[in-house]
Length: 296
Image (tube, rainbow, N blue to C red):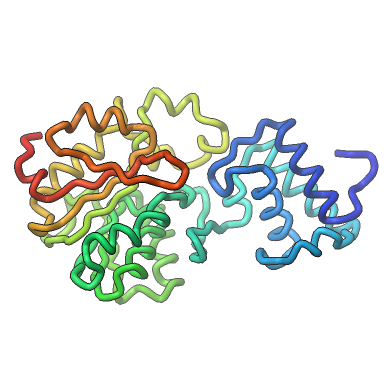
């Protein structure tokens, strides 16, 4: 820690950004820049609004506040604890979710893409949707907001994650619209036909888990491990989706860095990759008609 204490919140922010670089902290779970994540942690630690104006950076810190800030950044940077686990929260857009070490930290391109998917399908026409591998329940909540007239199912295998999802569904006052299912994909889910099957499943190849940054290793391995080639759960989901989709239904999957692997594994499905603002384009759309003809 510096000999001379930073006097203002802005001083602390500059100090924190430099500390992120020194400790080679991994980003991407809460924010993609050290500046944005450090500012978030500072505001949360000091109980200040996240939408504070720039003038807040001139705020002088007390000795007690400096001590709190130093401790939170010690845990974040020296112990490599993800920021979301320190604050017990994560956001998708304006939606806030409770998170802890039982669930993967919410982050998804579906926040950006779901409005376009809804427009493609015809928002009012969609009557039943499902989020497979729901984790914290964040995408199920997102679906419930996007499709106001639809029934929403959410599927999760981890009992720990199910408990967090149940809490989040209740905190968003959606217990009457979202039904949680403890199941390995659709194994234990009652028969139903869906207009949309959505999933951000575990897709990291097992061999790559050891090479993940420490922050990502703190997330549940079960939420990350996609098997030998990353496609184990995806294969099962696609096979089971054939009997679960309406005739005009869609499966939409977020698969990280597996675009090439997906194209090679499922050429007959004619995967349609959706464009994202950052160019990652890692979300694919699959039509029910293609799945029905697939012999996988």
